[in-house]
Image (cartoon, rainbow, N blue to C red; front, side, top):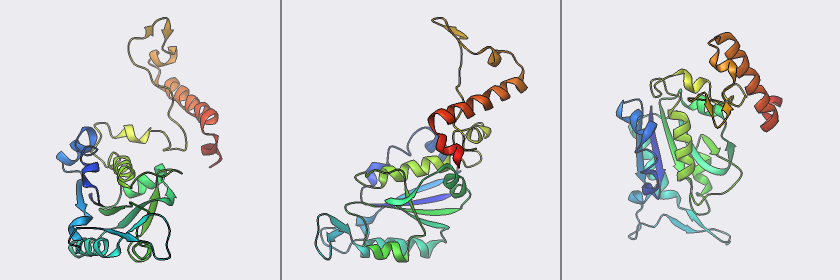
Length: 225
């Protein structure tokens, strides 16, 4: 998979992709992540990429010209399955969205900033709009990093144990069950006997029951879905 991220603050995206699973995924060739500075495509002598709103109002708007120039350049180089815009008024990201995106070959992610982008970009270039929650960040960079992390870990070969992602929370509209590791007893607190029994059938049944109960208590909305 190739991911191109368009931003006015590329430095915000250096750290999230430089360690742990994201770094290993790139080192192994499972994903290419390219971060592009929108300012490089500004024709303004000061490299400005924003301007005042038509009609007045507080907040600046990301200008159409440099964004369009960068998207056109990338589109001329390859075909993109999705051009995603990170915005608070987009569809709230869910696990199934990540599953679907992970199957794609090339995606482009535009990070909003200021008051947002000139809406003509959204009308004519964007194919999918995503939000990571009902709140507002200073820009779309951190949200884009969340999407990339959630998607890349699903690509076959990225995780050492590929079944791990399949048992994560939300994959079956259930939260994950409790997990334990050694020692079997600490401060008098014991690991459930069933997990030490070696009976995989009973362990699986216990995990299913615990996942359902935890979901019922903490996210009953998932069961309704």
